[in-house]
Length: 193
Image 1 (cartoon, rainbow, N blue to C red):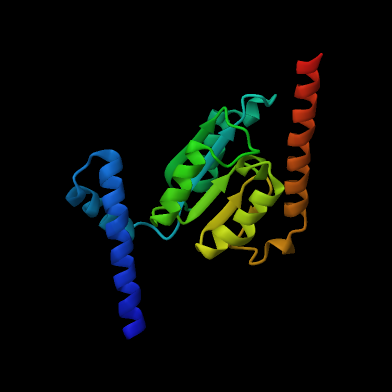
Image 2: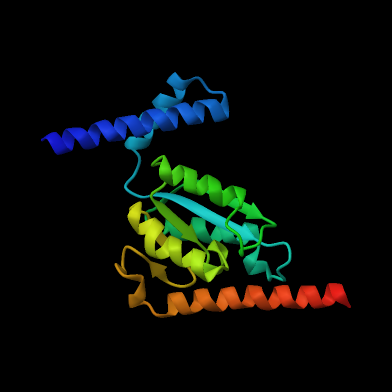
């Protein structure tokens, strides 16, 4: 009973902190933000944050466009009884860094408890840095009890408790990292020439 009470108090405290931060960030009175935060507690089981990214230096097909990534996430969620709470879009940001505004907003909302599921078109949209993507997939998302779905990689962490069950996931992650490196080398050579 004491442990349950302590958890409830920690949850109330975290909500109060998030309410205060959101109030300052949005200029909405804290009382209104607190009402919103209370509503968050009653949201569906899986509150999805769709993460969409397109780098300006990537040559891409129409299937990689921002609009098509959004349509794919919407379609997947509609057909799997999931609700997209927010779409986080980084248009023109490289996947080799995680200092991207949309991604940082996603992390903030995970910390505040607004998002407990992240969905991406494929692993390369999350990032192209093998070490950092691995950190999020192996440690951060599991520690925060966040479900991770990569649509085109047919990966759902709810179905795979251990990401290493799917050897293709870390291998694809390494491949995307290497592709980013090769692109960087080509661009540098072009600039020198």
